[in-house]
Length: 59
Image (cartoon, rainbow, N blue to C red; front, side, top):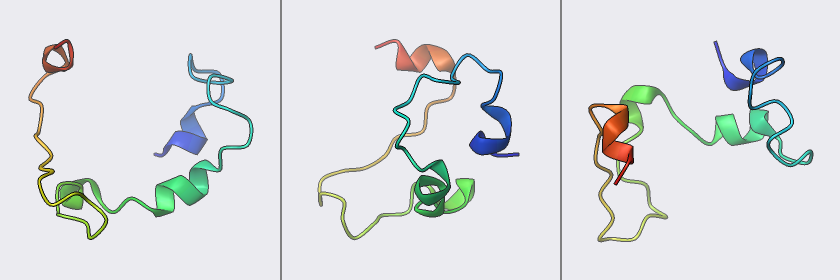
């Protein structure tokens, strides 16, 4: 399952600019397990923090 195969008919269809290439964006992202591994382009002080629930985004 990926964004491109599920966006049609969803609330997000038509939300993003037409020129966005989600296949190219998806290729920039590794596996979900590797998402917090430090990337060379990140600021040295940046550390991603995992959220355990949706409510943590409401800060």
